[in-house]
Length: 309
Image 1 (cartoon, rainbow, N blue to C red):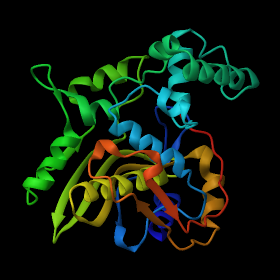
Image 2 (image 1 turned 45 degrees about the vertical axis):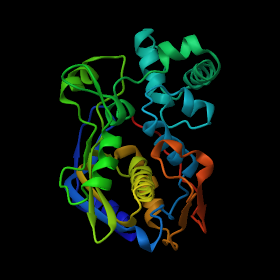
Image 3 (image 1 turned 180 degrees about the vertical axis):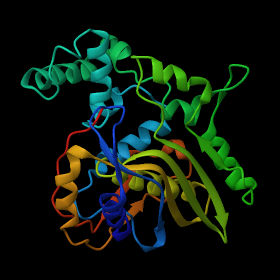
């Protein structure tokens, strides 16, 4: 994972400080790329502990076509909680009345999460994030109103037309982007925007284009998630794994993460772990959390930071 650390240093040295949608401020560069040979180990960052439970459950959640956070909450995965909570506060007229991360804010967030977990009626209204990844991957709305399953279509092409250069899944639905931007009822448009599969010499590779990349908090999750997705699809299509290539648009460090980045860069990387997947699973929709085992993962301790929403 040295190349990931090199990218953090690149942004520190060459990035431009600028404002952003969240009001936090970032230091950013434009146009970078990382490459991971998945046969050399699973690219889980080792200079801080990666919460693999969240990575696996979030990926399964997106592959289900889900856009409501209840599944994540019920599996104690918190990474989308603040997005739904912010939507709730804005619609209730409370976002300017409760200071972010204050005791009241934290107390109300805990109450909100418990309602999402246990109250289906509340969840239906406030757990929904809108037409984000799961919908676009599995239920893209076609011109006639039909659902288009991009994941199933990609798997079918890999199996039956592996030389195709059109094995693409897009999360950037232009017809729904403005709705996501303007509305207070949805999460923002997809950050990891489009990915393409390629089969070469019996190996499956995947390239992701990510328009906006939170390098400290988000990118380690994204690397692990798309590496795992590549492995899963390779397995169900009978292929070996090749590379995961991660291409960035705006790659940034939030200004309130600078101390955490310094701490991470002070740590020595450790050997990559190995991801083992239940070989009996042959259908992308049959995977469960228990089908994945991360072995020999020996990371440094976690480093906490606040998410910019």
